[in-house]
Image (cartoon, rainbow, N blue to C red; front, side, top):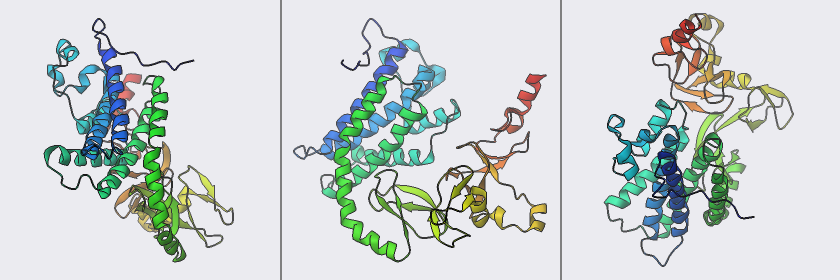
Length: 367
């Protein structure tokens, strides 16, 4: 049985819903072609066109999410959005950064910071190649950089498409994602070669006391974790950044990498139970407070909007880290209505509330 293809809009059926399917198809095609172009050595501009095409694909697929809410959300000035002009393609569209802002502000959905960073790297590279003549664009160093950028961006894009937006987009998308993953094997082979070359250096780091952590992007044990507590590190293979939490078990006095889990976990050396609060107390400003300081200041942990866990976010060197899901947050504060301590957007929280309450608007609605 052949797999069903996503229908293409016809001239007799030019509707906004047909256009959003076409946008998805175009976005995926850009991604597929750009991956293939990266390895076409007989084409002088293969690396340049790979970067440009990949970025175009990412931007279209992000904007497709807005179109599933309403077609006008991808028009630069929504106040001037005209359905007839839109159907003819005669409109000014927003860029990737604005699309992400609208997803977060209008749809109320979070786009992980790591995903935004990965997409930004592709955008910056694309802008250089579009506007300037890059003399070194065809060398192997350039190819290596593009491979790592595309691997990182695809990892987070795939999460958005298949997981976060999986119930919104067409089911046929799952098949196309699988096909793109298969094409990405060429990228993986390149990263395997890099890993083999640097493996001796990684073993030296391990002998000195570092813990080698597996990279979520390239899946090699190439993150070198040295410091205790939450630490952002860069993969020695694909350069992607991630956070790992090295902790010393109080029972056996051995170090291990804590897992991003809610509640308790076992020490891999002695199986002692360790809660995320136990770990947080060792590295946060809240955990370091004396009983006297705690009475004056706020020693409680905050709510994490990323994993919906109570009392899991603490202050680490001026930043806010969730010890349950290992996510860094830009801010943390108290809701103006319920006084709950939480991450996320607390602007106008008195009337619209926070993740823990509905604010004064919800309270009056119940009346």
